[in-house]
Length: 128
Image 1 (cartoon, rainbow, N blue to C red):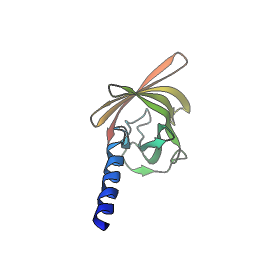
Image 2 (image 1 turned 90 degrees about the vertical axis):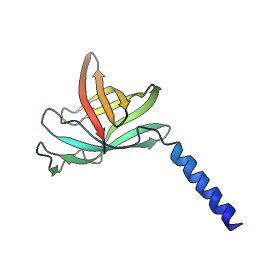
Image 3 (image 1 turned 120 degrees about the horizontal axis):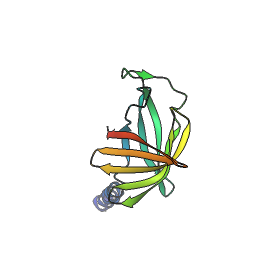
Image 4 (image 1 turned 180 degrees about the vertical axis):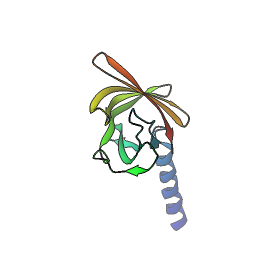
């Protein structure tokens, strides 16, 4: 009986791991116009995906303090198929929120967004 319960618990755990979205995990952002970058942890939030800035780096790659650490950088993010995700993204460098388009390709993520009629490419993030 004990082995059966342990086996069932293991199967449930593996099923949960298999259900993880490919976007989930830790991503290093491309340097912004100031040369700063950060680590974003993407995880489920409700039925969508959100990403929180956990660590900020200066242009030299040294960890730095930032009032945006702990802030959600991406939210309302949902898969569209073919590795594409759409949602919202916040740019700490200029304080603007954009409608985002994220394109996942293995361990890289091409990030772009539009606000009104202004679109910008935020570069390529890499899985850590």
